Length: 168
Image (tube, rainbow, N blue to C red):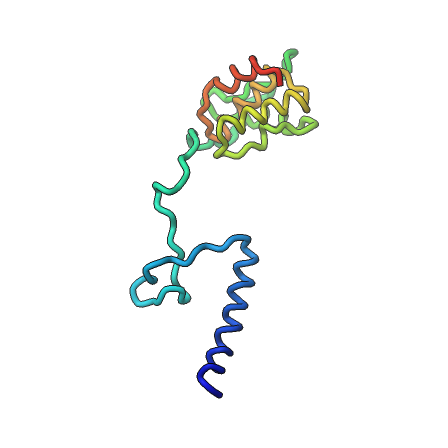
């Protein structure tokens, strides 16, 4: 067998495997430039793709570390639609209030907003809850305060103030 034939026998199955593996991931990363780590050639097994520099990453949303739910008493349902306390005396989110809000139908959008959400994401979810789940402003405020503690958001009262002025 010729040198080209042997190379083709090795390259074709290897490339096919790599292509299938990268197709299963949904995205492919560009090959790192400048060769691999000492002792390895660029693109050979064992090389790690380069990570973007911290300056190339998008800025983090304003948040603190999320807090764990805490059992600190029964939930109270109020005439204005709110439930609480949303927070325990130590500032941890209330387990009882969390369970109550998650039991509501239709489900509240604010309870499904990601920890890295921005202010617009939170406000959009709050407006959706008013529109589709028919939440009152005080009820949505309870849900927001609970989720702000759970997810570590630091938007303060801005979403609550915005919601009071928003017709949704």
